[in-house]
Length: 264
Image 1 (cartoon, rainbow, N blue to C red):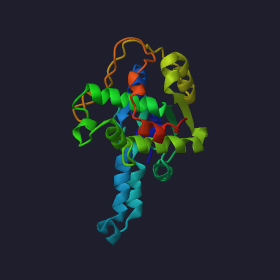
Image 2 (cartoon, one colour):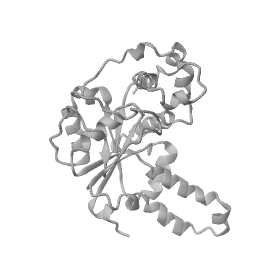
Image 3 (cartoon, rainbow, N blue to C red):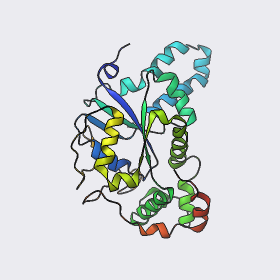
């Protein structure tokens, strides 16, 4: 089957930890009407859930692998078929070893990843500032007594940060298909970094603006932050720039000792 996506669209993937500039990146890229940089995408989860059907009694009672594989092969094509943009940048941890193996089998063409890197201590400081300033933030909804417990919960091996860290680490094993962007470079020299990204995508550069960015909205939909907590994805006014976060000095010592060695 030759789908509309295969004929006319290009699909890239964004791999990054939360609080690493994903929303900033999406807001900038989405200024280009040809591009849709997605919020957290469910496409990979759809593929994984479909694959797990192979473990069910119903499937094993009638193991029609070919038909289910046809559905798995078409997940991304089907999901993005009606999106008007020509270039999709899908955000998700596609580069963990398990996810990458699934993608190799069912994403039937070469794919490229943009990997956004940020110092892990800066990520945790950003989390601290966010949940301190927003009482409804999800780390405050659990029975955590202090910052050490909240950050420990954020960093547990079932959370988004751990999955994204695993994806980033594995990306280095496939550097020929990945373009690495440091958050600090993106905010310090956004035009220069964007030109490198466009070159990686094989697309002509679009004249972006880097001041008073729009809140992220794709195809008329925006984040509903009451799900995770107010202002999780809010972009602030002014030019794109690196801002010192005083919470970097408030990270509990045991958290710092456990994770400070993780660098890219």
